[in-house]
Image (cartoon, rainbow, N blue to C red; front, side, top):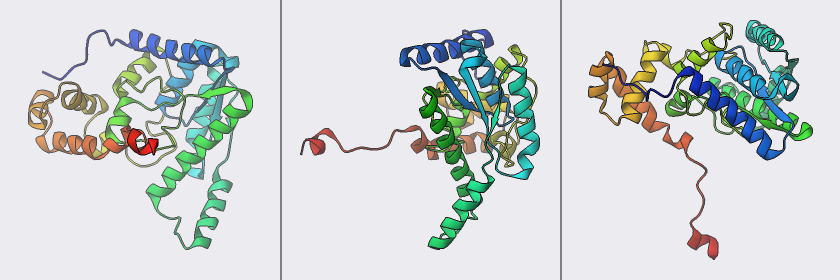
Length: 265
């Protein structure tokens, strides 16, 4: 038997909770709406649909921010999805910014060719762009990070995690896919602009299976061996997922600060 979440976590319920969070947060902040990034992925498309349902298209600003020519197809998909929701997507080309950044790093003697570091830098550039628009137009920044992303560490500190609210932050990726199906969100690239394999692809399983492993490990507190038997994956896969959850725990923690005793001094 697969590990499972409580039965009240239906696509309809999760959709309603996400929509209500957007509406309540914007209302409490007396903001004019939200700004979000569209990258061609199903998560960002679903987020745009939820935000539009909650606030109306006039209160949702959608930015499309590619950095490479290889992202052009995903960028076009993102723009088509935005237009289908009644949004007017705004494209911000990050290639010049990335080029200037690399030149600046080269001048300091620090290489700007590390793939992971560059992807993290791009995530932070996109965060800066979202917040600039938010600051100048009285909007809140909304992000598409899922609970699956957070547990596995498939997030960038002060990048993809840089947001005022994460409507899917408590939803597993497979649950977001179910919300997408409920909202008739068009099929799109699972990875958006990024060309690296997804976590599920690296593990050789589908997203629903990966989420079931996470549910067993995290929600049910079971051992990797028990989860592997219940879900029907090999023990090495369950162990690897458990290791990822443990190693990336720092990404789920706020910045460390001194204790009260030190602050009092």
